[in-house]
Length: 329
Image (cartoon, rainbow, N blue to C red; front, side, top):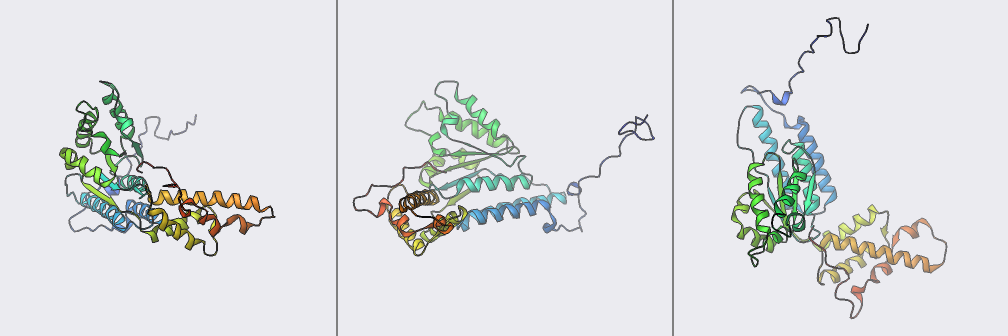
């Protein structure tokens, strides 16, 4: 009787071993490696292209990401020739104001590290102090280890990491988190990347007070605030992505808005731009409803100067800020 999988050699037939992965074969000394044919390299280029498309500006950040990618690509090529070296450390610190793209870069970094075989999963598990620190004795270690377990094989992104350190309270449990992280960052380098994120001045204080932690962070990446020109370009991209457009002189009006808003407290870069675009849509909708007339496609797509100059930032004695404070990305 015919049985699927059986051959003329009988039920004890053994399949021949699969061909070895070419990338695992040690090359001869006179061989060459073409990085352009490395599939991982192609995946990295795709990820970097997405990063360029998603984030305007940030040239120094993108350059650092490319340098990290190059390091790991060359490390892979060296391994092909049997050139062994210590596994490079990839723990990082992202410092910058809110809305500067730290979370987006962390996501793309995870994809890139996964494509290059450095981590097993292209995922980012984001936590804050509340996710790690317990309120009672004995609660902190289990919470921290649970977060580490969820991030295993990928990236643990600790937002506003400086809140883990509270020197004014000697009994604060945040120090216990730091001690656990120190151990995990050293012993689990092959299965975990930790990224600390927060405001530059507070992060500097945090690392100064915890030199053991700082010494385990190989890459300190600074995210600068966006220029006004970059913020206007970001606004135009956001508007287009939502199938809107700026009408005549509306882009110039939004530039005026940026000038006024950036001078006020709690400005949050791209996040504030997104909030402003949302409010423009709100005023546009209200304006169109109150006009009591038939509407065409162009009407529904166009944001006018009226929709922008209606912001409270242009009014005399307006509220101190149009937006509420936002946590770091």
